[in-house]
Image 1 (tube, rainbow, N blue to C red):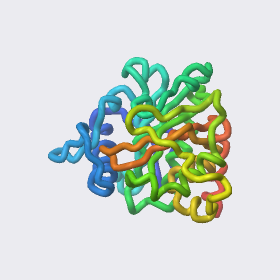
Image 2 (image 1 turned 90 degrees about the vertical axis):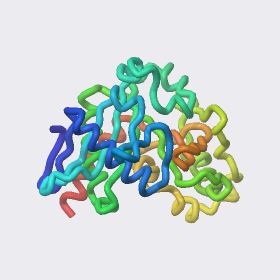
Image 3 (image 1 turned 90 degrees about the horizontal axis):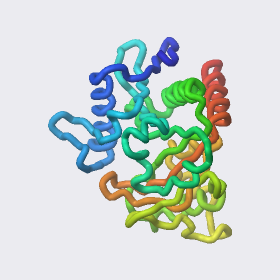
Image 4 (image 1 turned 120 degrees about the vertical axis):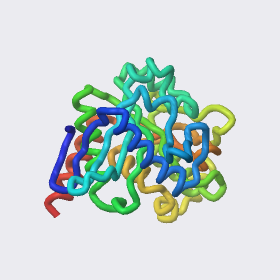
Length: 254
């Protein structure tokens, strides 16, 4: 058990059944709700899975009263990625600067919450569990793909340009979009950005990363299978852990 409270329990998956439950929740959110497709989608079993699931750790957030799985995150250390052949993000982003940094890395991915539990403390509990995992594994830097819904970059020029101009990662700790899906995020000059409109258009998960001190890599990636435009978020582990735990403590006393 990573962490629990009267409402939620956060733990690592310990069995194939646990992983299957995570894949089923991912199917409900990514496929049934958001329209994702791809080789890993099993409509018969109602699972969304891929090659990396077998090599990663999976954090599960359960409703403590009902036992229902309501949130998941997939975590991959460098050692896991070496066995798997790569990090998931490397299909979309060149991670060379991060991998050459000497930092101990952790990839975050496949994050989702059951619709009923969005907008409340559930995500904070997942983040607190990740903070415990980071501390236990002595992680320096976290990174992972986060997404905008849809594949029309023109409709997202405000938020993508805002992230590019205001939240870019330093060059020695960045990742650069690569391949046929790579696009620039520098779609508007800095003085042409409507800051309020841009921030409103940034997805909740990306805003959460930014509040944790996150930055973005260079460029974005159009993922046709998932029907998303992806950015690579990069976070300092100490800042993330402190802010995650402070947010959870603040929420608990309100």
